[in-house]
Length: 203
Image (cartoon, rainbow, N blue to C red; front, side, top):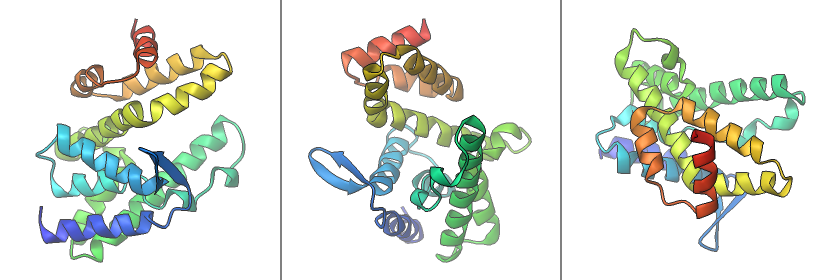
């Protein structure tokens, strides 16, 4: 890893360290988006060790300063939710691009990083590398969800006796993932009841 890359990742962490939302991990408290970004990077390093620098930055910055734009600022319902997600994606991309420019990367690299975060290249097959990087970012996000956040997500719907909602989310998540990510996901060590839910979703 180059010093330039280390400095950018550190800068992203410094921003995310300001998050007042807390995630518990191994009985310790962490700023929510700080540990999320680090989990994303760990997943990428484990399963895509040859990932290029811009992809590594995009993965770490996937949720950079996410708390800045609140869900409550948008209308309730599905339309408001999608407007919020679009606004977040644009914000993350712009802040990541600004951050890497401040650390010596050029405008083209900043633009490419922003494009990966926005995942706009999933719809643009003319740029194969950016398309592949966007898909890898999507894969990493899905795998991190399944490994670290699926249990908490599932619990709230189990308590509401709404297993169908969980199964639907797993199916939607699965559709976003590549074949490689499917293979990785099936090898994750998940609690037995979560594996059963995944099996139902895929049956």
